[in-house]
Length: 105
Image 1 (cartoon, rainbow, N blue to C red):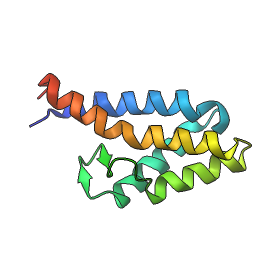
Image 2 (image 1 turned 120 degrees about the vertical axis):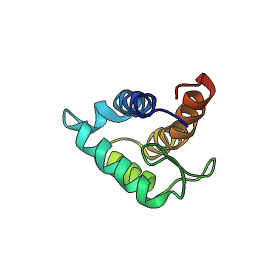
Image 3 (image 1 turned 60 degrees about the vertical axis):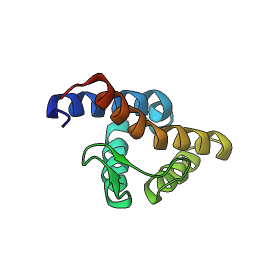
């Protein structure tokens, strides 16, 4: 079982990555978009972890699509927005795998 502390560190890493990938376009309150995206992914995904919800590889959830629309509305080109969302959609599984592999828990 993965420890709570390790899972929270992974969520922090997810937030840092979200900020790096989408924060500049979303602005100084990017964290509100991160929280909305993460909460919505929890509703969309039936696998992974309560803190790190995962979808099938290459599948964008409704939360990912909503984030893509938001990025495009804020001026990001559609192709870049799609790439950002695809990268972000893959990250929870990578982080969860790393946490489990490292034996943090």
